[in-house]
Image (cartoon, rainbow, N blue to C red; front, top):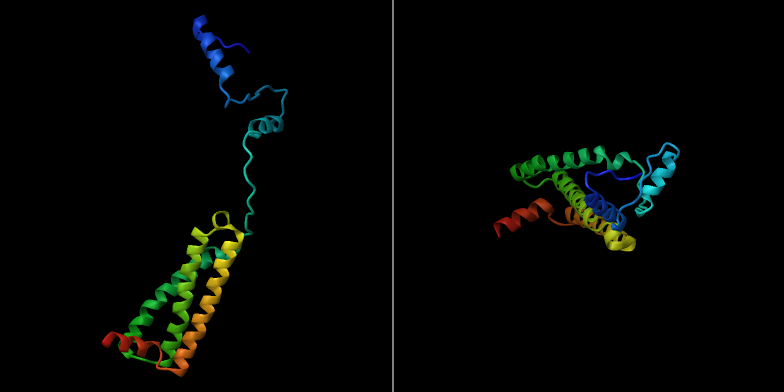
Length: 163
């Protein structure tokens, strides 16, 4: 197919630009070529890396977000009741459970955002996730031991506040 232009000199310049441009690919729009041939010709230059797409899961969708918000909002009245009423085993137990879970969710979001496998490697991501899980479990056990065998979280905060 020839390129029709008004002047011959402009036509020669346009043809030479098309021939020398290395990034241009020839795209066929003729009816004799199928769409599969056309798409393979066009996309041969770009090969996307293959990433593993996770399977859809309700736990990591909107239910997960709703649970995070419910947990965060429930901490506000729990702190208010603790500040008004003082130390109580039930509020100490709830604080010793909800605060580490809330912190775990926040750190897990940070690991997901900043230490994904493409940046930190698969082993770096797994090490961070498992160290977070181990730390959260240790904090939960520590809060339980502190609430049952010592003065409790609320009394600790009151003593630290008045010191």
